[in-house]
Length: 287
Image 1 (cartoon, helix red, strand yellow):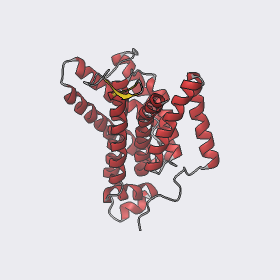
Image 2 (tube, rainbow, N blue to C red):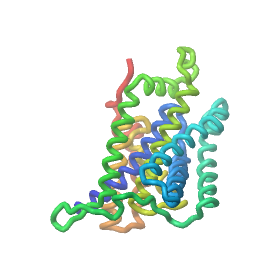
Image 3 (tube, rainbow, N blue to C red):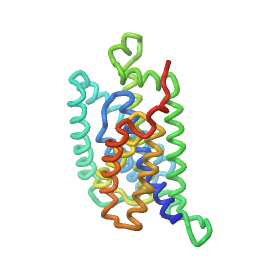
Image 4 (spheres, one colour):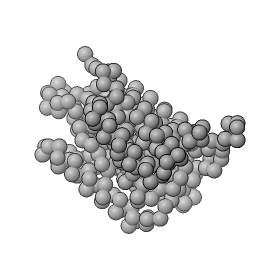
């Protein structure tokens, strides 16, 4: 059971991080980004290529993060800002089309075979007693997920984070009081790309990723964001962890084929019982 819980927390940290990336962009641009997982996949594949070329591990990690940030900023500047004046629906369609385009680009350049991001601790495990061993990659995913959630929460308590929320609430009013909506949007998309790169990179150092990985990952990320009401960072992170644990228990004691169905059931229950998420009433508000 302990191994199942740890595996659930590991995958839950991936879901939570991607959900946080979705929420970050929602808070600043008020747009659900369906291309978030593909953004992370592109950055991770660049890192995998650099690692295969012989670059040191930490250099490839840094390069992967930079690619994620640059990709997010580029998408915002080249696509999203141009469509923002036409309303939310064109932006939503753009993220869906972008997810398909980025997935196709990955397939054309790197192929569709599963790949991994080799880390120094890959394959290393730690015995925790009772014949149970926990992989170091699992510990890394959980710790990085927790640190990332704390860092993002602290960021949104800063003045820049407050300005992002103001832009999402009313872009015109925010501009009147001197808030640079374009700069904040670029920051949000850059942070989203960074988190997406971390998410897929963590999954690749623990298992295999391919062009089919984003399909399930983006859905699980949106489930986590739904559990946080698309606004609560804490609710999104906790929701992702809960979803990961539930998914692993379903796979271990029922059937792996039922894991995806359970995720959709969770979305349905959340939307019916708590449409604003499970942390309604405990969110921070600026006065």
